[in-house]
Length: 281
DNA sequence: ATGACTCGCTGGGCGAGA
Figure 1 (tube, rainbow, N blue to C red):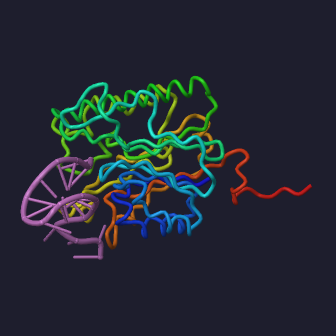
Figure 2 (tube, helix red, strand yellow):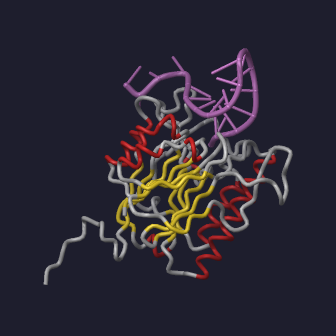
Figure 3 (spheres, rainbow, N blue to C red):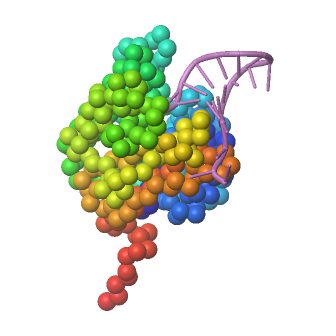
C-alpha cells in the first residue's frame, strides 16, 4: 500500500493537480486536509474516474478533510473520542466540532486524516484549543492501541507543529514568539511517542520541508517548515519500506502551499504489492 | 526559473492561514 497525506488548500481549486499526482505516483490511499468545502461541493467525479472511492468531512469553507482510496473504506468516523470543538466566543465543553478529523479502515489499516488547529498566536484562545485537541487525540489513540496493540494505525496530516529547530527554515517563525515552535506544542507532538506512535518518515528522510508560505519568495528562498507527518503504530512502522516528500508539487501553476508526504507499506496479506515476487509451487 | 500571497464568500473587503 502506498499512503499519502496532502494539505491541498481547497480541493475545488486543485482537483486536477491532486488527482494527477495520485495517479502518477500510484497512490492507493490519499488523505487530504483543508479541502475547504462541504460534501455536496466536493469534486467526486475526477477521483472516481481515476478509480478512487472518496470519503469527505466538510462543514463549511473552513478546514475540511477527506480520504481517497482505491480499496473500499469502512468504519468511517468524523471525530475521535473526546475531540474538543471551537467557535469564536464559544469556547468550552459544548463548543461546536470542526471538520478536522476523518477516520477510515482500508485493508485492515486504520487511517486518520488530520488537520490540527493552527493556534493563531500564543495568547489566542485558538492556541489552547490546539493543545487540548492534540491531548485528546493522544488520549484516544493511546486507548485504541491499548485495546489492540497490533493494529496498523496511521495518524497523518497537517500537525501545525515544527518538531525540531532544523525543521524551521522560515526566519519569521521565532521561538518564544511564534506558534508551531513553542515547547507545549512540541511536547504535545512528542507525547504521541508515549502513546506508541513514531514518525515513520523521519528515519528515512531526516530533513525536508513540507510547507512554504505563499508570501515573500519563501519557496524560491527555501524558507519552509516541516509540519506534515505520518505517525504510525508499531505494526504500521514495521511495514514501512520507503518514504518521499514531493517538493516539486510546490512548483508550477496554482500550487498548494503544502506538498505531499508519501509512505510505502509492505503489509501482510496486501495483494496489491507489486514488489513482492510471486512464488510458484 | 521554484518569483514577490491565496483561499472562500461576496459582490468589497475580510477572516484565516502559519
